[in-house]
Length: 199
Image (cartoon, rainbow, N blue to C red; front, side, top):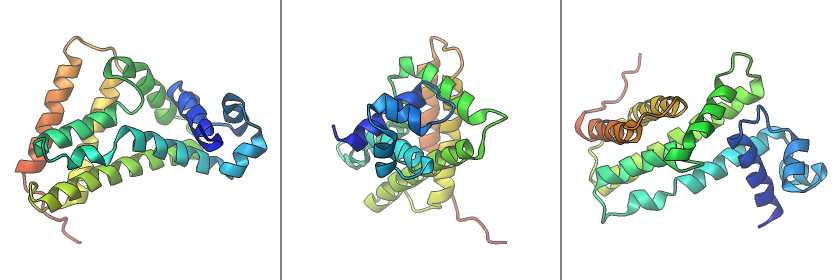
C-alpha cells in the first residue's frame, strides 16, 4: 500500500469512528507517517478530507454494477443506491458508523471545515447518482428526464434511510429499506421528471 493510500485508510478509519475532525497530527500518527509527509500528499486539511470521502465512495460505488446489462435496470439502480447506505460496513454493522457521521455533521456547533466536508460528501453522492441515471438513459432503459431532479429525489430518500440507520434497528429495518429503495427507483422510472421552469 502506498503512503498516500495509508494516509487515506487512516483518515477513513477515523471518520468511521466519529472523529470530530481529521487533524493532520492525528491522521499522520494513525498512518505511521510524519506530518510533513502527510502535507506533501495533502497540502491542506480540505484536500485530505476531500480525498478521503472521494476514495471511500469510489470504492463503495463502482460504476461497473450499473453497466451490467445482464441485470434488470431497476435492480441495478436499487443495488447502487443500497451501496450508498453501506459505504463503510455491512448493513448490520453500519448503525454505529451512521450514528457517528450524524453526530459529526449534524452538530449545532459544527465548524466551517466540517460543513465543507459534508458539502463534498453530498456533491459526490449527487454526481454519482446523476452518472448512474445518465448511463441508464443512454442505454435506453430510462426515459429522458431531468437528471438533476431525479438525483436529488433519490438522494433525499437515501438521506432519510441513512438517518434511520443511525437509530435502533428493528428486525424488519433492512427489509423495509430495500422496499423503500424499490419504490424510489420505480418512481424514477415511472414518473415524469420534467425540467424545472426557469423563473
